[in-house]
Image: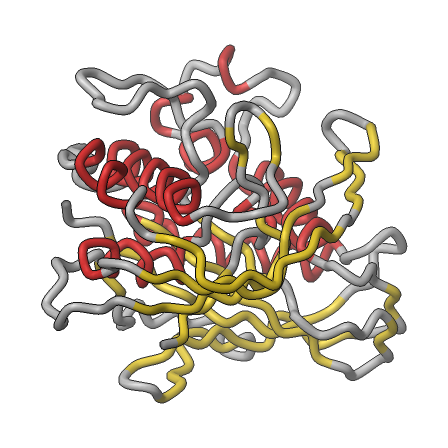
Length: 309
């Protein structure tokens, strides 16, 4: 596998007072989707499936990736995963004033890295359109990436120049010594289904099944096209890892779907869970998962976690 990803920091400067919900992922993700289509769509009255240039359209690739698979060891019972994640501000603040900054992150995965200019331009368009219910306008002041622990500005809202010189993280083979204990802190609501139902507890094998499926399909659709060949072997090994401590709880949040015109509840588990066992084979996936997230609703920023030892 050669799947890669990179995280970018975006900064908006508000031109007026703005009220946002506690969880801001839906507002940013929803506005981004609308703005992206306005930027690239030449037939807005048609569905993507009816468009003649679907195979060459950035919007169709980012939001409506065709789910065509041959010889996958893992059956696909859903749409292809989006090759991006929007990580909203983690602050509990909901009121912002003129001149305040809103900082969020965007993760691009695989071939979506080539579409960075589209993402930057779309967020600049969204800033001009306005965000939130009241369409409060703002300026995209800049985009940053981290290189060797230091922030590097790759786009300036003043000169409109984008420097594509950024580093990426890759899913690398494990080269560490044997590890038998690990703690995972679920930062944003994590929605993982087991036997068709969302779960409030997180056995290690359930976590890894969800994470490996996600990385497998991300690589199939947006990376090398090969996926994870030892999927079944990894899942079997994951059953031997046990939960040593769990402090998880369920939290709910709502979003309004402009496309479906309905309110949707998107709850998930947050908190900490510790595992014991032979964790070494899973470290590459767990580390990469910190970037690409796990579970459902990842494009809204759900399923973000951090590892501690």
